[in-house]
Structure formats: structure tokens, C-alpha cells
Amino acid sequence: MPSSSAEAGSAQVPDVLTRGVLGALKIYKAVVSPLFTGSCRYLPSCSDYMSEAVERHGAAAGTALGLRRLARCQPLGGCGHDPVPANDPWRALLSRRPQ
Image 1 (tube, rainbow, N blue to C red):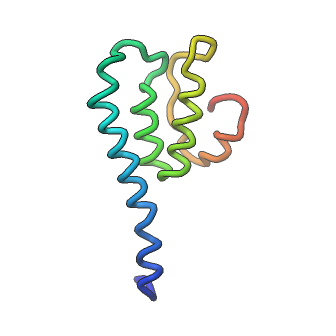
Image 2 (cartoon, one colour):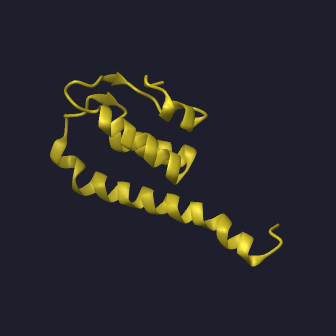
């Protein structure tokens, strides 16, 4: 149980940020994603990858992982199965090779 209301407020900030990022991703999936059906190079799709990363690692690390994935999603990038790292997202972000 938090000892002060300041601690309680700061503990909810990541939850609000996470819900905000996930809400924006849901809007993207409903409005923009259908326009590009069948053009995904990776499995899961970049939007599904970012959603899973944000749910698993929080707003900051999940968004960073998703943006890194988007940067790889281009003709000279890779393709195939690319799961969200199970643990230590910052190590995965700093490595040169996707994990």
C-alpha cells in the first residue's frame, strides 16, 4: 500500500501511458492498417508486435522496440518470424542484431 498520495499518482502514470499507446495502436489498426493488407514482411505484423511489446514491457521500452522494428521493415531489412523479446528489452534495443 503506498505511503503517500504522490506515490500512488506516480505509480499510475505508466499505466496511463501504456493504455494511451495501446489505444493509439488500436485506432491505427482500425483506420490505417486495412489499407496495407498483405504487405507485412514480419510475423507478427509491426502493429501487433508493438502492442505486444507495450503490454509486456511498458510504454517506453515497448514503443522503442516497436520503432526499432518499424525501422527494419523496409526492402533491405529482414523478414520472417520476429517475436518480442521475452526479457531485458533494453539489451535487445542496444544489440545490433534482432533477437
